[in-house]
Image (cartoon, rainbow, N blue to C red; front, side, top):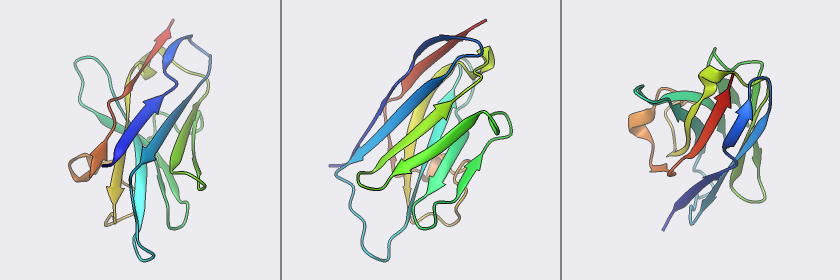
Length: 130
């Protein structure tokens, strides 16, 4: 059984930093398979949106325009763990952050592939106070 577990959320003041982790277990890929892992967030009353993603095959990364230059996504290849370093946080970054896994994505940028995710975690709450 595949499990996706996010951690690292919390309360931080504007301008502060947080580091989120997403650990994927029970997920198997063959030599010819590819996958991408993305961070998505959902603010109260809003739709879930893509924030950052990373592709396993070539390590390519993509960011939404709202976080580019402030957030950094990285991956630990020893385990399937993806990190999201969030710096210079703003109140508008508040929301529940989810980790999504897509196997063999059609393209590297999966920020808009919410309906194509094979697995989701339960999310971790990030609150940025002004």
